[in-house]
Picture (cartoon, rainbow, N blue to C red):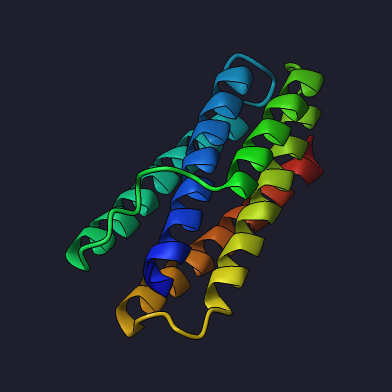
Amino acid sequence: MSADAKVAKELVETLKDGEKGFASAADKLRDSDHPEAAATFQRLSEQRAGFARDIVAMGHEYGDDVDKGGTATAALHRGWLSLKDALTGDDASGVIGAAVTGEDHAVSEYEKALEEDDLSDGFRSLVQQQHTAVVAARDEVKALQNLS
């Protein structure tokens, strides 16, 4: 498996987790005292879905099927997010806190990806662009945490 394919699989799993997590957070906060957070989370869910599509499309260009299967690490992280979600319930600060944790994980995954020496130039460029947006999203979510 190429370095691009290995990294792409990890990032796609992280992005799918983020898409689902943000959508769930948006649903929980939509009718709360934090509708602005719900709108932000919905937008970020859509962003993550788009990022995953972009990585999958680039993988297909390279002949890699990067949207099939997951990794044990990603599955473990998804399990942890489900547990955290069950514990936080609908409390806005808990939901936003869980989103911050998820975003810290996403930034970490992108930084780990960028440390890979053998990425193709095109894929590295895409990962770098998405990393910049993910860092900005994490900062935006942290700012919501400060408001709750």
